[in-house]
Amino acid sequence: MVKKRVAILISGRGSNMAALIEAAKVDDYPAEIALVVSNRADAAGLSRARDQGVATALVDHRNFGEDREAFERALDEILHANRIEIVCLAGFMRVLTPWFVGRWSGRLLNIHPALLPHFKGLDTHRRAIASGAKRHGATVHFVVAEIDAGPIIAQEAIDVRDDDTEAALAERVLEVEHRLYPRALREVAAGRTKLTASRADNG
Image: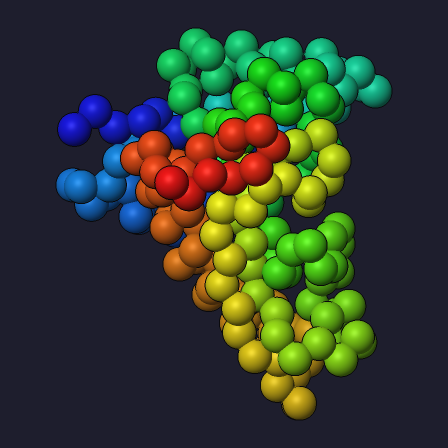
């Protein structure tokens, strides 16, 4: 089996990155984690990736000032130099421009800690509790120019407990994320889920 070459973009500790690296160790997994890239030199995930034998790279966004596209062109160059076929965002704290999203359309995945289309953006767990939501969870979706609006690849829900705090709910959702992201990447890398006409086709 020819495995798809995947890059993971991170900005921090890389817990979802670690889950993807672990999943890809299985022989029949259709993707290999070929590269981890961070926009921050102090991202703990870089050393975690190196400890797992995964190549890493740093593209520091601060070197590009306010020129977001220049940063993304440098990032894109590294991805192509490493023959990357699929990009997974995992705690990557940069809003991507339409230029980059267009370059990687159908091959750019993100995980969001909520059941989209509910609770787009930040502070999802706090907002879920405040709204009285009974169900919460995580979503893996294709990235489009509008934030957290891309076609959904996979979701998993959990119950919101009456005594849930933001931290407790976040911890349980993170466990969901670590299961869900590898499952979704498997579907995309195997060609079973594709972006067609701005929707995820699970055919």
